[in-house]
Length: 77
Image (cartoon, rainbow, N blue to C red; front, top):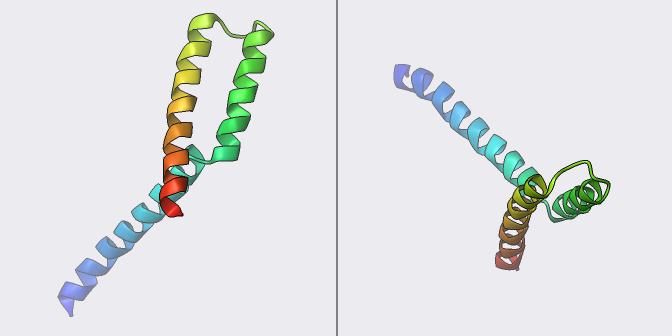
């Protein structure tokens, strides 16, 4: 019984950690959100709000996440 008392909080934390990871993954790799971010980034660049270097760095990161999201989507089907 004492063993159950000590492992219950650990199991709950592991479940919570897994749920948080799912939420983060869903936001980081959400295709419509990433598409919106790419459009907004391009608009900021066109309006001169960000420089070439910033645009390229952020675009690379967004496209990397977009590629991962597309691969995940294909693997689910």
